[in-house]
Length: 124
Image (cartoon, rainbow, N blue to C red):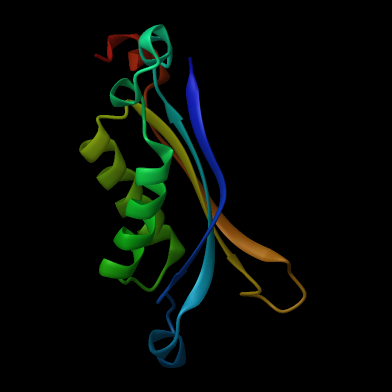
């Protein structure tokens, strides 16, 4: 299966369980792998037939800011569903990390995998 990756996408958003967290922006770091048949785009060097990672990166930041939640688990689940439905992605792996959320830890993260890798050949 071909995959399109976005790694280390740093966004600022409001997220957190505690009231003080709801009043500030915090950094999240997103890693995303999306199953996609890249041969179709490569055939004619056609951006319209691939996943536009610049557009998806901007959409991820917008989605996080327009859909505030308490938990990174909730954000990961909702973001995965949104991306899969919007871009017709058959499979993705999404990691949402919250640096410095726990004292003495570099980061905490949730990683989810959704969809089926076997559907990759059915894309337009």
